[in-house]
Amino acid sequence: MTVLSAAVADARSRLSAAGLPDAAIEARLLIGGLLGLSSTEVFVGGERVLTEEEIARIENAVGRRLKREPVHRILGSREFHGMELLISRETLEPRPDTEILVDSMLAHVGQIVAGKGSARILDLGTGTGAIILALLKESPKAQGIGSDISPDALQTATQNAARLGLAERFQAIRSHWFDAISGCFDIIVSNPPYIRSDVIPALEPEVRDFDPLAALDGGPDGLEAYRAIAAGAGDFLEKDGVIGVEIGFDQKETVTAIFRAAGFALVEAVRDYGDNDRVLVFTVNHP
Image (cartoon, rainbow, N blue to C red):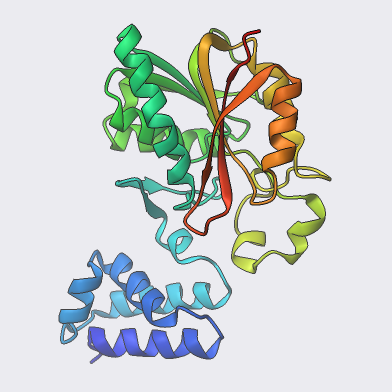
């Protein structure tokens, strides 16, 4: 007979022995997620007797974590901006720092809705749909498109929209940047790939081996996606529209220069929880 507290203790010791720094938190999160329990319920429900099937599922999940597969990938979902989002093989796992992009853009969406009564949003490289769906959740008069080159990502984003009751205001389109996009938008947002190609082999295994390469690799200097977005955005942005992008911690000056050269003006730069530059917001530079 195995009780919950013993399973958690065993998982914690095995993760700790493998050198994983947050072993205690991860053991509770992983087992709680598998059993549909909150961290508190795991903590106070230690005497619960586990079934053979539950023990087997926990054993499988701990084995996957020991191979450095991230906890939320094992569980198949992650919380982001108050939403539970499905994640899949070709989607990035949404990170807390990306919530800063959402929060930075909400004020701009609100202003546009106040002035026009509605807002159209385009999310380039949507992945799970995290950014666009968070904006739609908080802005009932907005509608949006999530584009991606990955059919797997688009299917996941569509599922997430349906689960969140946002399907009527969300459309998924397969597109390489602006190639298959038409019409104009009040807001364009993107968390594009921005890691230099030569840095990827040195990333933590959780990122390098499990996040999709297409969502990480920004080319030789990490800036290819920003060049593509800056070059195309002028044709798809309303004259008073706003662009928001997530950036790497050392890319503020270079990304700003790329957008300035394409006719945009920087209106806001926002730092993340670690005090690194993380979000840049641009508008069309009207001479």
